[in-house]
Structures are given as structure tokens and as C-alpha cells.
Length: 398
Ligand code: ADP
Ligand code: MG
Image (cartoon, protein in one colour):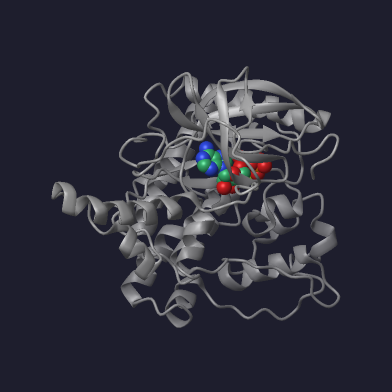
């Protein structure tokens, strides 16, 4: 954590880049960084400030992220392609070393928070569709225009582009920036869900204002408190976190992706391409719709997490074609020469559309529509998976 080579311990009111940016509060963190809501005094707007850990490898990763996000910004002058916008970057010297810092547009909550707001019950298919459209627009842009594979798509790395964003509408959101260090430690660097706070604040203000100015802002906040969901809010979202992304023709790591969103070709070591992102995307869509992970592998008795993962995939999607199963550098660890798992012999086949009906109480037509959309992205043969552009044309979304 907060030691030499590690995170920079910022406090609200701290200034960055020669005083231009003022830290407001911590809004997130990852393995590599802490992320702060900051106020940009030059342009009078709120931004997100990602402060990377200082050790050389982290700095190197941040410079790589800057390179990719610069290409993203350059190819999308109107900022409409559903990928995080980089605004600036600089280095900040602190007690733990020199930290590369990225300044980006400030976005709302992650899909992970959205899933949790809804107490892991799914967010409803119309919202799932809305989010799927945005993510696919982003993926199509990265894949077919830029040649970038994200390699770490998961709910934490997709953020809502909230319409009540103080970065876009600081006056109406009623949010005043902190410009100096507060006395004492009352802000203490705790992480809060910003949109949630904002919604509650707005609900209170709305009530106050209705009597004064006779305007109704609508009960967005009240609804949130009641239902813990984001009804009435545009569900556009953006892809973030390019810390692991790569140019498709310059791949480095053999093992990519976060466990539950990892594609089978990555597990068996047979190379990967854009289609690995499509696999992760399908896992996210399932999770939004049901509130549960599509695949939640565990270490089981006598078998590894990888083997359990492959078994879970085959129970939902059918047997992996022998040619694919035996094609990877690690195939021999898991499969015999017939393409059967060596250590997990009895699989209980439970296909996706049945799971949706029997476990998640989907109606037959809803289950069919949704699994028709997802199933092709979960093809064991990566080349058979549809591209993001093809998915955007799927009838389920239209
Ligand atoms: P890491 O590479 O360390 O995982 P991320 O870029 O994923 O860093 O950021 C970590 C977390 O910070 C995200 O999951 C999200 O919750 C929050 N975050 C990142 N960027 C923004 C942003 N632009 N606006 C709002 N929150 C953000
Ligand atoms: Mg992240």
C-alpha cells in the first residue's frame, strides 16, 4: 500500500500539477492506483485523477495506458464512442516516489456498484440492453478502428456516464469544490459511492427548491432510496482502465483477464484476440441480467480453479470441440487426447436458456431472446464469435 513505490497518500485539498488540480475525495482504487475526484481550477470543472503507484513497473504501465488512451481520444473528437476520455497527464512527486497521474473525465458508479444496488437480483432486461449497446459501441471502436484489445473487461471497469454528473453540470448538481485542506480529518480518504450521495443530495435540494421556485426536479433520489436502482437515469456507460490493454499486434502477457471473465483460450494457452473481450462482455451481460457471475470457479478437491472453470463452461455450453481443447500449451494439463477433462469426469449439462428459466425465473421468450444474443459470444472457437459490430445488429438489441 502506502509505502515507497506504492500508493500516494493524498488528502482532500491537496494540490497537483503546480496547483491546478485540487483533490476532493477518493472515489476508487485498483491494484495499481488510487482514483480521486479532483477540481480543475483552470477549467472550473470536476475531473477524475488516477494516481499510479510509483514503482517503476507501475509507472511504465501508466505510461502505456496514457499511450492507448491518447489514441482513443484522438480517434473520437466528439467523445461519443463510450470509452473514457483522457484530458491530461503529469508526474507528481510525493514521499513514496514519483507518481504518474492521469486526468480523465469524471464518470459515475461502476457496473459492479449497480449490480450491488440491486442486491444481486439483476437490473432488468431493458437496462441490460441499454448498457450492452454502450459497451458494444466502445468495443467496436477499440477493436475495429484502433486495434486495441482491452483484456480486462469486468463490471468494475465499466462506469456509468451519469446525467447528474457534477463534472458536466456543477451548478445544478449543487456541488461546491473544496479548494483548501479542511481542518482535522473529517474527510479521511474514505471511499463513497458518489452517484448515490449525489442522488440523495439532489432529492433533498429538489424538495427545498420546489417550494421556492415551484419547479419539480422529479423524484430520482427518492426512487433510489426506495428501490436501490437507477430508474430514470440514462444508462449510457463507458469502458475504463486501460492498464492491461494492448495493441492486438503487440501482445505481451500470456495470461490476461480477471478469473471469472477469462476466456477458455486464455486458460488453455492457445493465444487470444479481440474475441477474448467478447467472451468477457457476455459474462458481464449475464451478470447484469441475473445478479450472479456466469462462471464462479473454485479450487475443488483434486482439481485446480482452471479445471473447475473449464468444467463449468462445458456444463453450460456443451463439450469443447476436441480440436480446440487440445490446441493450447496447457491442454495436456487438463485434457486427455479425446478432449475430455482428465480429473472431472461427470458433467451435469445445464444449458444457458434453461438456467435462465429454471434458476432465474425468466419467461421462455425472455430466456430465448437473451441466450440467442449471448450464446454466439460464448463459442469455444474464438474465430466463430461475433464481432462487437455484429452484436450491435442483433435483433435482441433492436
Ligand atoms: P486500476 O488500474 O488501478 O484498476 P481503474 O482505472 O480501474 O484503476 O480505477 C479504479 C476504480 O476507480 C474504478 O473501478 C472506478 O471505481 C474508479 N474510477 C476510475 N476512473 C474513474 C473516473 N473517470 N470516474 C469515476 N470513477 C473512476
Ligand atoms: Mg480497474
